[in-house]
Amino acid sequence: MLLSEILRRPVVGEDGPLGFVADCRLALDGPPHPLLAEARLVGLIVAPKNRQGFLGYERTSVSSPAPLAQWYERRQRGSFLVLWKDIESVDDVVTLRPGYTRWSSAL
Amino acid sequence: MPELPKHEIAGQVLDVNLHILDRQVLDNGDVPIGHVDGVEVDGIDRGQELDPDSSPVVTNLVLNSGLWPRMFGGRPPESRLHRVPWSAVSKIGTAIELGEPGSSFDVTWPERWVRDQVIARIPGGRHAPE
Picture (cartoon, rainbow over the protein chains, first blue to last red):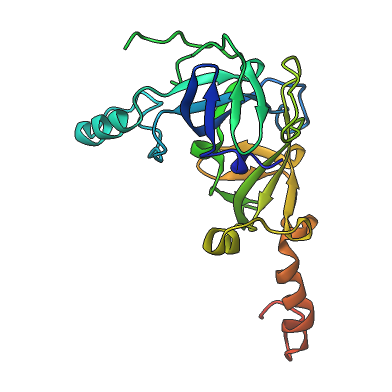
């Protein structure tokens, strides 16, 4: 499956709609290959509004130019990381397991 | 809103949309061979309950297959997806670098075809300029 097909899909939890998939987080912590370690999917970043981020202002410590950083941070506020173990199914809608945990989406 | 806890991860962390999609791809001679249109993973069956204990693993990058779907929607057929295996990726930075020459990937077939069928038929087209 292509991860780009999951982006912008709506996300629902036990208490209703939570937002949209803003990004997919990978970690290079698998078995080492000759060039680069294996990459596994850690989880999905869920944003309450279906808005594109910009240059990672909302997930990194970059804070200048300040007006832009504040603007983009505000556009993505309330976004969170949900781990793979908390995802129940992926289809036209991404469904989370009951009792899922919200983690900070910061890099 | 309360501060959310941070999930610590041992290896390098990458966000697909932020760090990989639309990045230029360079072969081992720093020659651009395309850009990333998709990241393919195994272990996700659409509509099926997922296994919480086995995270999907990235298998391929998909290059240069996104122009028509972006303009007209839909998904390119399997035969049009130009894949580069993850094991060929050597570095991810402002560009994605591969550890193999571009000629070893299907994505560069139009260049090879033009070289062999068009350029080679032009007088002097089979050797470097003197």
